[in-house]
Length: 113
Length: 117
Image (tube, rainbow over all chains, first blue to last red):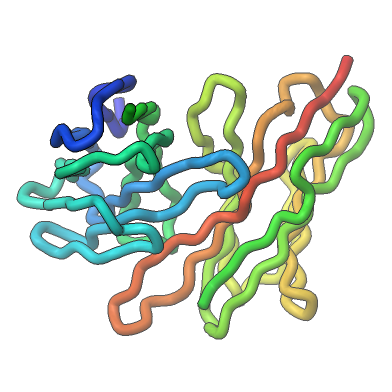
């Protein structure tokens, strides 16, 4: 089954404790991206990647890191989480770029206390 | 910079009514793509439609229809004879063409649609 998976689905952590949210797709997609969803703000793009070792900032990259060492995986790293990073995070992939249909993961609800 | 505005934060209608969700976008590009996604109460994001800037033909899919008007920079979504299962948050999104490698996707704030039985 074609899908995007994210782990964990739910995470409660404390300020400053490094964490990683994993994202994997099995569709051989070139493009992968991370978004955060906050009430009243819709989805905002954090980072995206056009291919292995090619990443670029979205609109809200501060406080996040990403890497794309393999085509299928695109982890999101919060090196020192803060309460303002409490949010619902979605990973997505598409065939060849932002102009194609995005396939979204199920979401990760992160709470930073 | 690209921007998407969904001015209707919440809409509530009675089942079987028709309802239109508005989407207005801003872009300096001549080549771009517009999307609608649905987020039901279960939380997942579901793709509904993709439209490129050169195709202004309206599209109909069952009870759903989309009206793309470049002259007013709008890409509105109409649900005809609404049903309770249409209750969801709907997002409009915009992707510009590749400009020096940019591949950003910008979403509107979303419209929460509630269909009451």
